[in-house]
Length: 356
Image (spheres, rainbow, N blue to C red):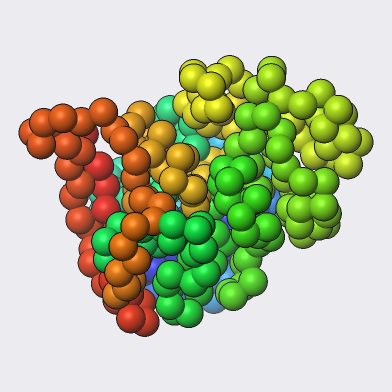
């Protein structure tokens, strides 16, 4: 199963919105076949393992990190091919949370005389696909919050200048994060200040859908995110107060619009937005700022994971990463749990979770 887990991670940049899955086939304690889900729409791990096996798998043991699918999607059900191949036993890391599978694959294998063991390395198998599990169980994307700050907590100087706070190595790391998420989200302030492309350029991987939070539709008609739709799709998240003429122009340009309510002037209902993104099969979102978005996310307790990149710089007065959270008592402050702390170039990266 450990081998299958390592294999599964190879699909990290390409499998979503499907989960990462790895599979190995064992005979006399030796692996004679292995495979993983390489990309969305392609063969699943079990099929690749069977196809790669050096001999018939009849009577052998198959290990797979996630319950084999039992329904038609982009590909036929994996359980049918497994049953046809007649292994004696299938060892499953964790049951599939997808309601169209959710135990049906396991039962179908058992009904056809195949012994099934479930729960081997279960915690590791679930953690491997925490984005997928969150999406399936909550109907909302897994939300990763990333921002780069100076040692004194600034994401820009007092003039708004922010290029570049972090090191080259940190920026490459961020592009890897982009490649492992379905969507990337920023506020209109970031677009107005930096005119970013929000694409994957410093590593191999697919481009995420770009989501821009723009309550009034202030986005310039010549913004880069509007004119390179061949690279990545753009979604504008706005309100009923958004500029009607700009809305019409953007729709003619092929930009998708999501309209949600304001919770206060200039701030949209982010939880509602994420639910709408979930309906569009966006299973994970990397949020890159700016300060207003970061503050709203933290205030509403929405991030599932945080990457805080801290550079060895002091900016003094400037734009703070996290604004007013309405906290007067230190006992009420938001507590983080650091999963990892590591270096990227000259920077320190905190991989953290909110203590809930």
